[in-house]
Image (cartoon, rainbow, N blue to C red; front, top):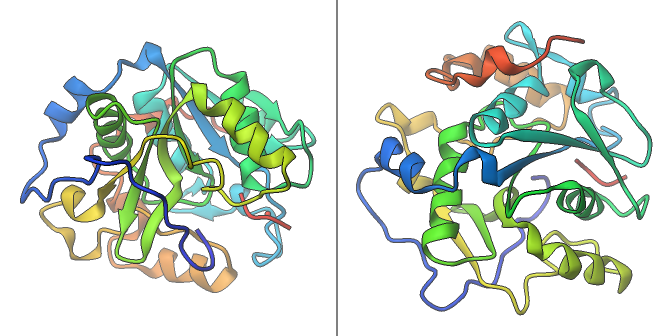
Length: 255
């Protein structure tokens, strides 16, 4: 999530509890089942700062796009690629959701994904998040379901992260209305909806000082830094079962 963080309006009573520990199994148990969730991977940007299509760049022996794709596979029965106004990434064998309103950035990709979904819930990630995990999405989905939220976002100290979230697919008309009124901000459709968050502190792993699930890679320097990171991206994927589910193959506005 590049630039200044976008803050969401939080519904009354939706503030996350500050718990000292998080039990992933219980979150998985209370989250909507996979059959009720569509994964939306936002991958329609132009990668201007990277200078080349970052989704296909290698990191830890895999394409960057495969990390968030694997995380979505853990919580969703079907994952669509919101790939912008033209088809791409067919080599991953997933359904493509094209922007109905081209040139409007990641909010248009969110709309395309929500309108392509056939489930009550959607889990959303951007394509440049190598530390995203299915456990995080399960926790967001669980909070959204139990607190009766429309939107539940990952929160870090800089603010909420709209590209790591759980959304009711019934948000689609509000997203479309925001776009048609000229809005492009990912939080522009939140007024009138119940919006909450889960802070990354609730999700911190035991080894957790370097746990940054919101880390996104926009530039060659950021990519090289992640390649050199002590645990590298693959270490943050420990315990993730979705890697095998990724089918091998080979953002203006960022997605």
